Amino acid sequence: MMSEQEGLRCSSARNRGGVQRVEGKLRASVEKGDYYEAHQMYRTLFFRYMSQAKHPEARELMFHGALLFFSYNQQNSAADLSMLVLESLEKSEAKVEDEVLEQLAKIFSMMDHNSPERVAFVSRALKWSTGGSSKLGNPKLHQLLAVTLWKEQNYSESRYHFLHSSDGEGCAQMLVEYSASRGFRSEVDMFVAQAVLQFLCLKNKNSASVVFSTYTEKHPSIEKGPPFVQPLLNFIWFLLLAVDGGKLTVFTVLCEQYQPSLKRDPMYNEYLDRIGQVFFGVPPKQSSSYGGLLGNLLNSLMGSGEEEEGEEVQEDGSPIELD
Image 1 (cartoon, rainbow, N blue to C red):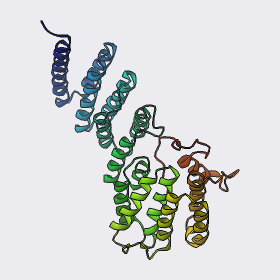
Image 2: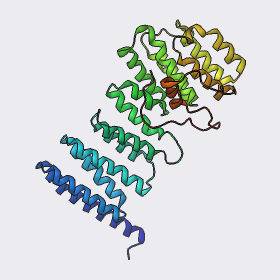
Image 3: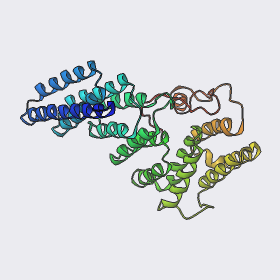
């Protein structure tokens, strides 16, 4: 007599076999150029599977259907099925697993780079991926998105996603390429300084250290250090040591001594105010010295400064440019 577990395995195999047969028929329709008919059939099957609580089958069918439509440059149909992939995840309360995150990143990579559907897709995917623990989206998904955007040479949005991942090394390698291809030689130190300060504002000390050490080691225009020729790089090096030590007096003297370098970008002292609060117990200022767009930019990166210790800094899930 068949056990319950064996019965479930057989049922699953039959379901997968049924999905494959359906996929074969739909693929034939697409290959004949019957895009509209195939798209409507995918949608009909999706809602049928969902009504039967066959959420994994629905997701797999929509995922492979989206890839098929992308391969025929049917962007609108592909984007619609991509959103249904997310709907299946949301309604089934599926676990956040690497395989699923890689599927979402694959879809993202095939979408038209400038389409509004891509923005909507990534925002919704990040929201789903939080899983209740990471307010800003799953770090693994951020890392996968960052790598895709890096390949597209969309460096500013790639940097945003690297900041919310745990991949300091990948971020550094991207920044080396970004600096070499788009920056001035006189700004090589500023690319990494900004990234380190922003990682620290987000309480990610480990990635801050990794991005600094990797960038300064691999950038062709930076001589081996420490100490470095560029004062700003020496400041960042000392700052990382000070964060490990946690002594406010060291942090204060360091910021005072390097003011000429810190004045190169008006955001540096704003970031340092936040870092002082996070790592050295400095009370927050009553109000920021910046208003308007710059103030909004800072708040979107770092939150309002009122989060409890140990929590991540919250902001929205849309890519922002932090130049």
